[in-house]
Image (cartoon, rainbow, N blue to C red; front, side):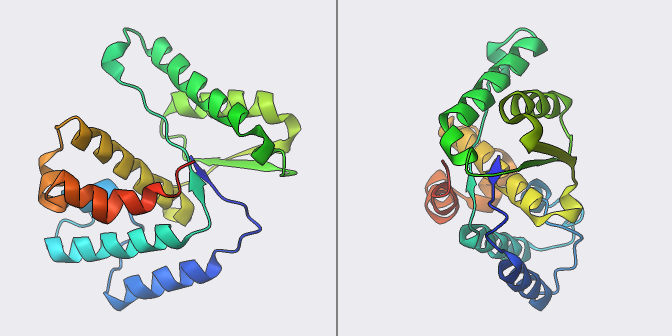
Amino acid sequence: MVLHNQNDDISLYLQSLNKRLSDINCDVPFIHTSPLIRQDEPFEDLLMTDRMHIFRIFSRFVEQLPIAYASFSVTKTFYQEDKQIEEAFRHQIRNFIEDHLEYFQNFEEIIVYYDCGQSIISKILRDTSGKIFGSRMDFRTAYQKDYRLLQVADFICTLEQSRIRWNEHRPTKSERDFFLTRQIFMKNFYKKISRKHL
């Protein structure tokens, strides 16, 4: 969950990012982090050095943004039914919002952007945010290709998932190839981003 006060203008950061990507002839429609790490489409023809360059540019962009984030996760093997997974996520998200209610009360309007990629999360966001914020909440369907901040959310989510796998000694082959070791991953990438974690 990426939090951004829309009074904090990010247009200069966006311009800088677009220029840096243009300078290295990166013409992909948008940055999707997992395919970038795995060398999947649209990055399948890029060398490791090129993909790492794109990753570092985008990482620097995220570091500079006036944002904060929260992450939520469950271990599916702990639950026997999808309903239990849904309740676990609902509990985490509701508790996060309630714990930070003073922060959210500063805003006249709460706009929630989500690509509806997971129906469970979409339902939880609508229900939980709607109950807490009422008419102040505006839920909008959005897509990564159109919003850099959704690409930022994808980037952070990918790093959080990688952190979990590295900590559990089960990184994917792509993560080992891309980041080499847990120490390098934590020091050079995750630690910098995690400073924005609420």
